Each structure stands twice: as structure tokens, then as C-alpha cells.
Image (cartoon, rainbow, N blue to C red; front, side, top):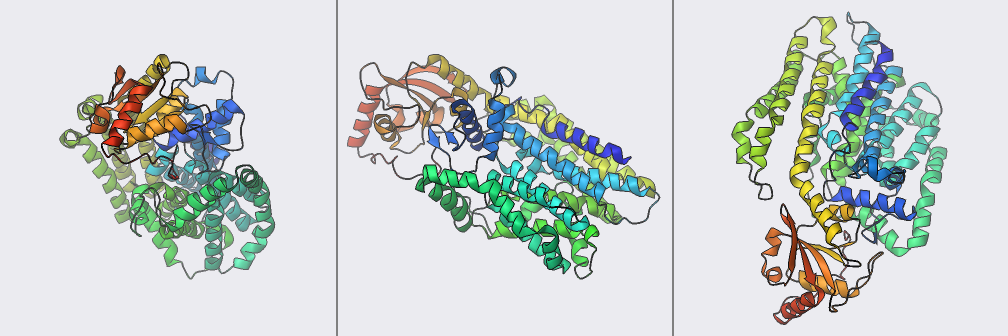
Length: 596
């Protein structure tokens, strides 16, 4: 493969995997609508300092991802060419992953790693490795998912990956690292101080392993570099603390950073070994190559390496830094592994470059075969799916033919791998890339349509109900949602929504909040004659005793959800009746860190 074709091919693959059809589905509850609504509010109000959602400040993430989304929301006639509002919210994540694919491929083209001798020209081998590394990152199940949703994880991964690769390139061949330190400041604005911690752990570990920590420091000049990082990142943090004061400091630094590391939040308690199976799953179906790359790096532990030949060692330190840091954290989520996926992609491609044995090839092909066979047998296990919210899911999923299409893609990957695995040496170099292209075809032709299929069943009814809310809502009529809580209702209606769960004192909370709570674009609603509240409630919650007796007018029903109009006087009387019956008093004013 000529070198001049590498970056265009990587760009085409990245756009197909992450940008194609990006705005064809709605937002998935619950976190993406909070990001999207905050960004849209910035564009609408012109308040670009503090993200706000549902009338409340949102302190959990820095503003960079909101700024990028908001700039797209602010484009003229946005609602006409992005009717669901999801293209704008997802594009920063998608472009961050595409950009990182290009940076990875460019790094391997500029600084190719040592190759075993072969009949294929060295330039072609290097080109194949560069494309394979970019695809090994992009085809990670975690990357395929998080690069197409409206959150900040993919943006952090893209920026941090570019930072680390630029710093390694500076160490390998000299040059000025200033762009890397500037990008690190943007990474801090994307997700917080964790970017500096992960970069620091990676570089220190690599410098010690290379036995050249001082040489690394001399080339990267970290102290002036961190000063540039601070100049980029700190002004926003200072302004936010100055304007918002103690609530911002306690929420962002205390809860969303320190407490997430030292304590368990949102019930995300996992065992210490949680990220080991995540490591395995996140690189499927090429996990055997990742493990081989780690073993290969460990075998060369004591051997010195030239800076320009140290990328495998650097990627190992990168992956281990993410593993150690988040293993030590008390709160653990699968998305925390995403910053390690670029390092895993490099290790996979470099392991394939080093002439892997047939047993290693066979183990990778076995995984392809298992996936192909499992999907081909979908008629046996899909009917066993029991999803009360989606009773027609099994039948519609089988009728769509998408699982058969996915099985064919993995069968094609298996066939291509088998042919090239046993081919003569010059052709064997492309065995991994051939499988990756087939898996990429699966992502585009089967996985993305499956997402559209799921959106039609799960999210489209909620969008239709949101349209009913906009049609039925009277002037200044408050809107509430109880039971199953969907932040996307706020996004689609563009109205403040009062959310209450299934607890028995929910009606008391709702009534009290309507009397007292103040938010941007929401004022108290007294129980006066003629006043009412629109209530979105799911069918299961509607049958609970503390909601079943509430007088209401049914206005619409979509899927699991119903839309009621409840007179304010009826809600006030019902709340008083429940209170007299011994229902616990309203507790909505107690601190809730994740309130929206």
C-alpha cells in the first residue's frame, strides 16, 4: 500500500465509522441529553461560562465539550438541517476519534517501528501497520459506542491520545512539544485534572522503563509545558469559582473528582479487578493480539531501546497507567477504560507486525468464528429475550435481518483471515487488516442500523410524547415526569421538567416543589382554580397506590408513557390525603449531587 494512500484511507474509514448517519437517531438516556441540553442552552442564552441544564447549573464536567456542541447549535437554521438535534451534540466526539485515528497513523508513518524481514517492501508493511493501528483503536466496542454519543469521554481520549503521541514523537526525534502541552490544557477543559494525572503517570513510567527519565525531561521540558497547560485551562476554572463560588468548588472538585476517586458514587461499586475483563472485552475480537503485544513488551523489559523504536514500550506504559489509576479509584465505570484504547490499538498493530505465530492467528480467528456462529444462531436465543418495556423486540429483531447481516460480516472476516493466515509470506502481512475491514463493514452495515432499530422502539415514542406535550401545554403550565426518568424529555420539549422517582412521597415532593421551587424559566405554581400541571408517567408507576388515586385527564399515550393533565388543586388535596395517611414528608430539598 503506497504511503500516500494511508491517511486518506484512515480518514474515509473514520468518517464511515463515526460520522455517517450521526444525526439519524435520538439521544439515548440518561447522560447524553444532559450534555446536549446544556450546550443548546449556551447557544440560546449566550451564557458560555457555566453549563446549565433544566434550569440548574451543571458542574460535573468542564465546558469544552459544551462549547463545541454549542457552536454547532448556534449555526443558522440549525433546526432545519439537524431536526433531532443529535448531529450537533455527537459531532465533537466523532471528530475527536477520527482525528486521533489520523494522529496514530501519522505517528507510525513518521516513526515506523522495527520490522522483521519479509518479501513485502518495508514501506508497504509500515503503511499496513499504520492503518491497522488506527482501525484497532476505532473498532474497539467501547470506541464504536462512545464516539457516537453526546458525552465528553471520546473528546478526552482524542485530546489525551494526541498529547501522548506528540510527546513521544518529540522524544523519538526531537522537535518542540508546545502543541502537546496546549492540547493537554484543552484535555483538562474536556474532563478535568485526570488528563494531567494520566499523562504524568504514562511519562514517568516510560522514562523509568527506558532508564532515560532525565533525557525525557530534557526533551519534553515539562515545567514550561505545564505552565502553558495552566494558561489554557485555569482561566475558566478561576472564573467559574469566582462567579459560582462554593457550590462549584464543592461539586466539581469535591464530588465529581475527589469523591469519585475516593468513594463510590451513583452505586458504581465494582471489584478491584473490574478493568481486567473490560480490557479483554474492549479489544474484541483482537484481544489475543493485545495480550501478545503486552507479553512482547514485557519480554524486552531489560533491553534498552532507541527512542525512535520505543513506541511499543510507550503504549504499554500508557495502558498500564490507565489500568492502575482507575483500578485505584473507588468508582468504576466501563467508560473509564476508553483513554487506554489508543494504546491498545498500537499494541495490537505492532503485535501483528512482528510475525505472530499461527496459534495466535488461530485464537483471533476463533473469536471471529464464535461471533459469526452466535449471530447465525440468533433464532435460538433472541426469543429468550424478555424485556417488559419492549415486548415486540425479539420478533422485530429477527424480522429485521440485521443479525444475519452481522453474522455474514464476521464470517467474511473469518474467511479473509483464514486465507491470508495460510498464504505465502508477502500476503500474510495483510491478514489483520483484511479482518479489520470486514469488522468495519459490520459496524457500518449492521451495528449502525441496529442502533436505528433500537431508537425506533425505545426513543421514538418518547419523542412523539414530547411533541404531544408541546401541542397540549398551556401558557406557563409546569411539566413533570415521575417513575422512569428520561432527561431526553427536557431536551425534546425544551422546557423545564420536574423529575420525581417512584418513592411513596413522590406526590408530596411534586406538590411542594410546584409551590416553592424556583429555577431559570420556572416559577412557583399555586393550587389555584384553573391551574394545572402536565405529568408524564409510565404505566407501571401509574398503577402504584400513591399515584393511582390522583384525579387527572389523560391526554396522550405513547409506548410505556402516558401524558396526564392534573389540576393543581387535585394534586394539593391528594398530597394532603397521603400525608394524613402517614406517607413520609417531602424531602426534595435534601442535597442530591446528581439532581437535574
